[in-house]
Each structure stands twice: as structure tokens, then as C-alpha cells.
Image (cartoon, rainbow, N blue to C red; front, side):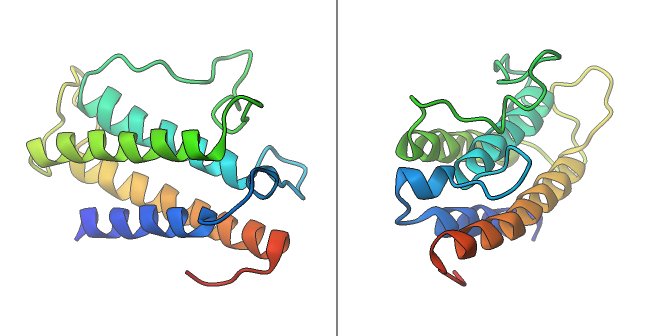
Amino acid sequence: MLQAWLEFGRNTILGKVAGLSEDGARYNPTRSNTSLAGIVKHLTTVEQHWFQVVLGGRDVPMPFDPQNPDGDWITSADESLPDLLARYREACRDSDRIIDDLELDSTGAQTADDYTLRWALCHVALDTARHAGHADLLREQWDGARGW
């Protein structure tokens, strides 16, 4: 069930950006760094951090640091929407392989045993759903598209 809700959220995000131009993907009517492209980049980082780094023990560079704490939201001119989507899909596939290899109560590769797969699934599904709501608003503001 947890994995199914996560997959539903992922598909909602993909549906929200389907058919967007680069301008639409970068549209930002807010004072924050939020754009549809930024949401995709951020959720890629979320997938990588929780499943690949925390549970999988992989060394995946993150696009943020203390000097650039919002680096996972900011897209550069050379990061096209198709490239961001390809990275998101790849991160989701990598996450799914790790998810499939662990039991829900497993803490994976962690040495502190702080987080279980169950916790990470809940957290990432919730974060994805939360940003799907942001994506709803941004897409509707951009071109009036609703639903998915």
C-alpha cells in the first residue's frame, strides 16, 4: 500500500508536467524558488537521499550545501525538462530496486538505525503528494490545465 501511494504521487507529478514547454516548466509566480521543473528536481533529490543514500548506503552527490540550501529547487539553463524528467524516472527506478530488496522494518545500510523503510516510504509519499498540490496550482496558473 505504501509503495502504491508513492507510485500514485510520482505519476501525478509526471502528469502535471506532461506537455509543458520549457517556459511552462520554469514558470514561477511565487516569491520562492518553486517551479514545476524545480519540483521535479527536488523530488529527484528526495528519492535519492532517502532511498539511495540513507537506506541504500550509496554516495550520491546532492545539489545543495550550506551556501546553497535551495540548490535542489533551482534549475540551471542547461537542465531541460526532459533531462530533469529522465533523472527523476531513473531515481525512482533506483529507489524501487532498493525498496524491493528491503523489509518494511529494515534500516538498510544505516549504522545509526534511525529510519526504517516504512518511515522513508511514508515520508517520501507525503512529500511527493505535498508537492503534487503545488504542481496543481502552478500548472493551472500557467495554462489552465486541471486534473490528471
